[in-house]
Length: 295
Image (tube, rainbow, N blue to C red; front, side, top):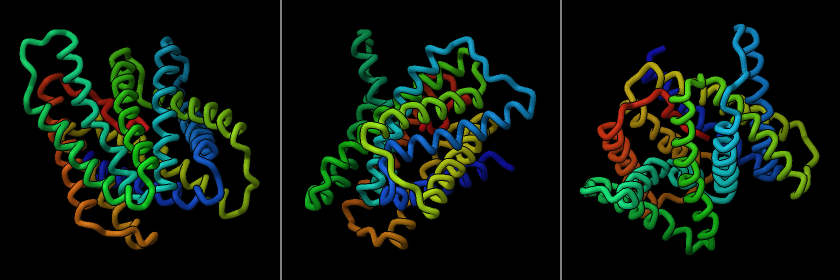
């Protein structure tokens, strides 16, 4: 399968996962969904690795630990946002990670006393946050500002997780091991958080949704990781934003999500800012194969 096609399929699967998360939110807390998503993911990756004669032993457990902390926190917030916001809105806010990365680059340049601040990055960040303002303005009227801020924070933490995934790649960790320990971390953290909020009884529909979330997320993450490893980073990053389009269509058809010009304009601004940030970042540093969605 061509890398571009893998990225399109992965984006569709992530959006479909969002649908399942939204439905599952009526039965389970975000922590429980994260737990079962991690359980299914760790099991699938573990079985595949063992069957292929690989190893899950790592020389950098601390790096995996901190990557799991940020990634799982981002995932919990994202699932919470999906359960309480229009699907496309929650997806878009999480995809703000590229804009946050641009902001981190600016902050690093300022702290290190860089001689010149890239004004294009500044414009990218401002464009992204203008998009956020347009998206969240309609939600204020619906008393959903808090949920929107949680979704925005999930994107920021995803950017942090991206940095850690990149560091793990440079340390020589294969993609499957990164995905496995992230899934394991999500399973452990989700279970502990779920104990605090209480565990819900299962139904046939609930179990099917949880299994679908885990399967869709794991297959999508593997496809996306493979696409980044074999394809062009900029092309993959652009195609990744198709997830927002798929989520928007799902939201309108399945959940009767409102279609407002401000929300559409905000999504367009965030997509444009994310693509520009990815382009500028790839010009500033060599691309790696670890650009896949860290959550």
